[in-house]
Structure formats: structure tokens, C-alpha cells
Image 1 (spheres, rainbow, N blue to C red):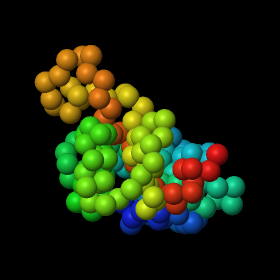
Image 2 (cartoon, rainbow, N blue to C red):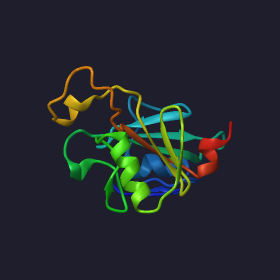
Image 3 (cartoon, rainbow, N blue to C red):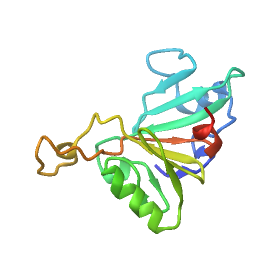
Length: 150
């Protein structure tokens, strides 16, 4: 799945109405959601809605199925890889970011992050259980200001 920085993905864009999203994707899981709504797609989508029922943030989770079902941007696989490798690849392409507590916020309008629920072994790599390298689990798409306003 390819992201559109600051905008979303082809299926869901910032500013779309909740009713439009539900019509395109189907009902959320496990039924009508609140402000943060989970959709049973692959990869899983978590949409944050503003008070006016428009899309505020599009989150795409890792799938863990194959490279084809992971999140991508500009030829770089963003999820289900070591976070440091993702950031290095994006920086090598000229994209700039600022670090956050859980990942990196890219100025073009997305964030890659990890809650440390995955480890190197989940990537199919032989690794010591003490390997603390973060695995990129989720990409959040929104304008850069969304990530930096406090």
C-alpha cells in the first residue's frame, strides 16, 4: 500500500467524511467506532476522525504477510523492517525528519513508528532475544504540523 504524504492513501484521504470511508471500505471493526476507528483491512487501517466526522489521520499497520502487503513510499518499504533502516533509506532519498519518542516525523507529512511489540525474530531474522532494535510497525499520515503540535 502506497502512502500519499500529508494526504493519506488512495482509499482514505484527510478530510474525507466518515460515511464516505465506511462506504468505500465497509463497516469498521467491531462496529461503529469512536474518534479512532479500526477497519479490518490488510494491512489494518486505523482512522482518526475530527469532531466534524472528517478524517484527521490515516494510520496503516504492518501486515507481516509479505512485502507486497506492507506500507511503501517512494520505493521504500516503511513497515515490518528495522525502524533505523527505514529512516536511513528515506534520509538517503533526501527526506528530512525529526525524531519523536516512538519514531520519526517526516516533514513531507507522515510518521513511522514503533511501540516495540515486534522484534528482529518477527522479521524472520535470527536474532538474540535481547536485540532491542525497533521494528517499524505503523505509518501515520497527516500534515507534519499534526505530529509536532502539542
